[in-house]
Image (cartoon, rainbow, N blue to C red; front, side, top):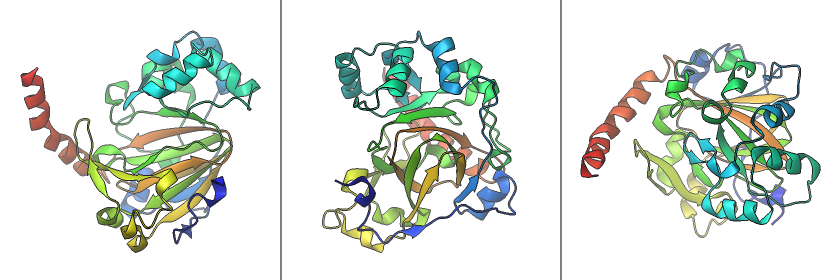
Length: 287
């Protein structure tokens, strides 16, 4: 399927970059609308980021890398990496940079705190991603700054929301990534189901990127009000809590995300975490 035609049956409203008078993440969170904006490079180091990762962390084995939601490589991805003789993060980055024709899985949710902790000091989020109360490594499961490496044509997969009512900040280092967004009120039309990880709230949709055009399979999509945008290198997006989304890399893409909690959404985050505690305790006691 043509990449640019992947979402062409939905009545999409485009979101354009703008200069907003809303200056920080609390104001943007209270506003409740996604915003795209031009952003200075968040990588504050003289050496290029990928070169720094190769030098400092190139020895890490890909199959051992951790993401805030689980493993960076799914089981099927590991088989592909084994077939390509990719064992370490350095080997992956070298192949990523030098052999664009080699097909590789989407390398996603690479946790900076768990895998690349020295990089955190050089990644400086813009003012629109602050204040953020969950930037300490102890809150990685909630705030989790992450890196994503995707070839053209790869995408996230299921439409979803990020857990426990967090806002999300995205920054595009290189390439172009298309987002499809659904406002929170569209949830009843998105064929949702509970998550399989703590705190288990409803945050996933059965709709995947490749099937999002199938209005015969998903007829309720006709009742939704989706938005679209293409995040380009040097641009960022603030996505308020509980906006449903999925992505498609239109070109080879390197991007960053961070989840945000502050006064505008802290009560929701606390409530959703507490709601999952009884089930968590029950599971732990059953072991």
